[in-house]
Structure formats: C-alpha cells, structure tokens
Length: 230
Ligand SMILES: [Ca+2]
Ligand SMILES: [Ca+2]
Ligand SMILES: [Ca+2]
Ligand SMILES: [Ca+2]
Image (cartoon, rainbow, N blue to C red; front, side, top):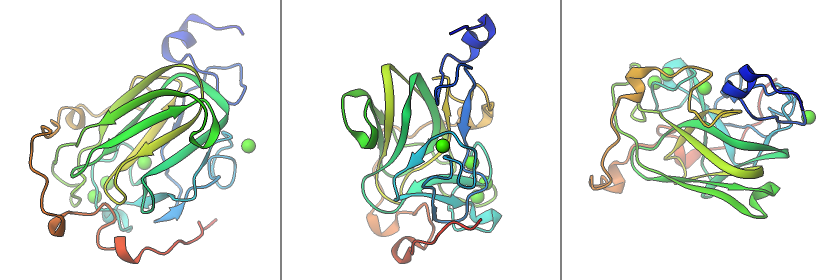
C-alpha cells in the first residue's frame, strides 16, 4: 500500500479495505432523537463505512435544538450517541481498523470505560481497555448538565473489529468517534475552551441518586424505541 508522508502524518488507518488513509468521523448528525443508530453508518441513511452499532446505541439531540438531550458543548452540534439499556453500546467494524481512534465523551456522575476487541460483538482478544474519568461541569449552551465533552485517544496494536463504549445507562454520551487518528479532534478541530475545562477529581462525592441529572432529561424511564426517520 502506497502511503504519502502527508497521509502518514495525519492518518495511518485504512478502514473498509480502502487503500487511502482517510480520516472518518462519526458525528451522529442527521440521526433523530432517541433512535437506534443501527446501520446508519453502513449506508442506511448515512455514509457507507461498513460500521454498525448494537441496537441499544441511540442518537440523541440537544434539548436546545429541539430534542431531549440534557447536554451542551458537544463537539459537533446537536447530536451525540448514548444508551438507555445495558452497560455498553457496541460498535462493529467487521473490516477492521488499526492503530487507534479517538472520541469525545461526557459523564458527569459516573465513570465510563472503553474496550477494544479484535472480533466483532466484543469477542476475541481484548486489544485495549481504558477507564474514562468523570468529566467536569460547565456552562450550558445555554442549557445542559452534561456540558463538558472531554477528548480522548485510544491507541492499540493489532486489528480491531469492535469497540465497547461502556458506562451507566443514561449517564454518558459520546461524539465524534474518529478513526484514522488516536489524536482527539485532530481532524474536526478541538475548541480549546472545551478542552481546558477541568475534570472533577475522582474524590468528588457523587450526588445522591435522587438528584442525579440524566443525559436524556426526564425521559429515561419512559424511553420507547422508535425507528429512525428517513
Ligand atoms: Ca456497507
Ligand atoms: Ca448543543
Ligand atoms: Ca444544550
Ligand atoms: Ca455530534
């Protein structure tokens, strides 16, 4: 495979069998509010990257933009990924990808985790595992308790075919999942004001559950799965 210096410098990943090392970012824009992402990124409504998600992986739109999302300062407005069932949402890339990936996440009450596997559906060898500390709070845009999206990169060795995005349901959101670089936001750009917001130290007491803000504000208990429109 021919690789130019420029391509090597900014992206070293070939996904979907492509010889080009294009950077791919899943920003979840174009998806509806609280709908399954499923095969949106396998050409069903979105670009055909041969990437699919487990059925519990949902898109959610910021309440400030007409959705039910209790978040702010998402790196690409107004939609992020989250889940309301299970302990993780799984991304499958059966063609495999290498080197690393990056993303942004917001988790103000509970920590999260990332597991990378060389088989689909979180099977095979665990290639990388990463804890995600709680993110800080910040001003909304203008509303939203989950108001800091922290960038993070995940390098690994080998060929990955699935990623578990783990955490507590309705308590963690993800955006700008980017393949082709383990440098967060290196392609889409990172707002320094967002990056500079400090994370809460892990010793910070967790609020009592009755007062916990939910990512899907007020709708966590009455969630009903709907098919994506269009
Ligand atoms: Ca496809
Ligand atoms: Ca927003
Ligand atoms: Ca907001
Ligand atoms: Ca987005």
